[in-house]
Amino acid sequence: MTATLTAAVPFTTVIGLEVHVQLQTRTKLFCGCATTFGAAPNTQVCPTCLGLPGSLPVMNRTAFELAVRAALALGCKIAPFTKWDRKNYFYPDLPKGYQISQFDLPFSSQGALEVVDPKGALTRNVRITRVHLEEDAGKSMHDETAGTGDTRIDLNRAGTPLCEIVSEPDLRSPQEARAWLNELKLLLVYLGVSDCNMQEGSLRVDANVNLHIPCDGGRIAKTPIVEIKNMNSFRSVERALVYESARQYEEWQATKAEMGKTPKQTRGWDDPAGVTRAQRHKEESSDYRYFPEPDLVPVTVSEEWLAATREAMGDPPSVLREALAATWKIPPYDADVLVNQGRELVSYFEDLAGRVGEGKVASNWMQQDVLRTLNERGGSIDDFPVRPAAVADIIGRVAKGDFDTSRAREIFAEVLASGRTVDDVVASMGIAAVDDDELISLCRELLAANPRVVADVQGGKEQAAAGLIGQAKKKNPNVNPGKVRAMCLELIRQM
Ligand code: ZN
Ligand code: MN
Image 1 (cartoon, rainbow, N blue to C red):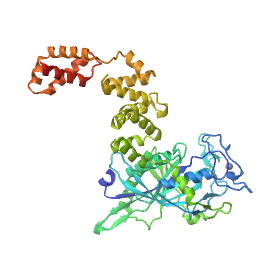
Image 2: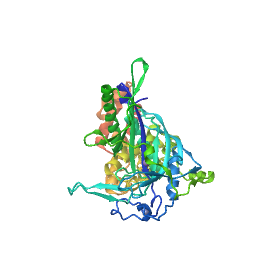
Image 3: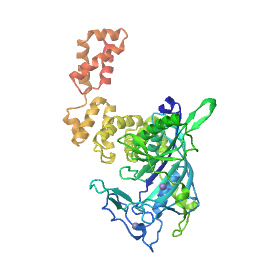
Image 4: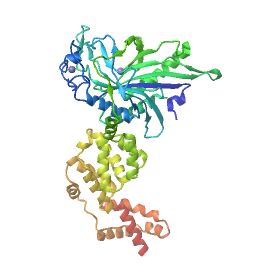
């Protein structure tokens, strides 16, 4: 299935993504400096990450393990032997004059991750070319406020561990690209590999895009590949790709320029303007003069260590979706919605479903009441004031016939607002279970006042009894509609 854009336009959009994620370590990749976000500039630096003479890097084992965890979850092959390389270039925020990265022997390659879409409209398996480890550079801050054109350098980020994930050009629409990024992010957060916070620069995406345009005689014209940078949300990625495919199509119609004849271009996304703009020409990999890093030993990975890492990994979202659907007998759509909210919400649901004993009932409450109010309030499910025990209590009382679902919703809202117990709220709202005697006399009253309904039911139209429920609730808001209906039918039968 292709998405709406490619279905409606006379070309196929071909997209590959390159994602950099910051690994969730306390310290940097090759020194002991902290990686805490938001520290005062240049306070988290040492001779190693500043590139001072005589300093030597030492690999952070946790960073390596987190990166391997990500690669395993992406189905990649892990190389038994991997080495480090220097990628040489000059930039003010790169004090060493090179970035320690991995060139020809990355620690992993050849994985795949599927696009997941709760609505089921998008499905695609996207191959992963490689995953490698590298260090981040510092940050240039172009000071425009002072009007001096100064640039300040903060090297706190220099040496921060990054995992670079490169996909094959398998994506076929901007919507797919966004859905795939959502799934990748979810996976990395579940595994504890990265917090993937784009505002703090923990996840960055570049996209390669070109068009395949069917021409006369069955030939497919391929437009030159453009790399888009500077997108700071998944929404921007989608918008930039939509814009860029339209721009490339227009350009192709005017110039007929094709891939191979025109060099690869780099363009930056201007979010407020909603356009991409040409940037400097991108270096070829030969321009970087890659060579092996002499200060670091290669890393060898044993089968035992790999097995232990795999063991400690925890379930990825794709496995959890299937497990939830099978264990609690809920539709795949429900499992998807729950899993996409994160591991903490899944735990909350499992606690609730275990108490209620009915997965679908628990799932409905999660989606209609818990999730909706959680989204309105913000914050984490772990701090949500109504705990699974209280929700299960309310659901149990509905099942017993103490009150109906709409009344239950009011109780839930009141427990949430007041922080009181379900017992307290039920008592203060004057909700007591309507006993059988009360129910019988109420139904008798209703039947006496509605001879028409009685006649209809006696004539075989049982559904006419539904007309009594609104009146019953007006007389006593605590009655259970199902019980009123059953009792009225019973009384009519006895007439
Ligand atoms: Zn350092
Ligand atoms: Mn990189």
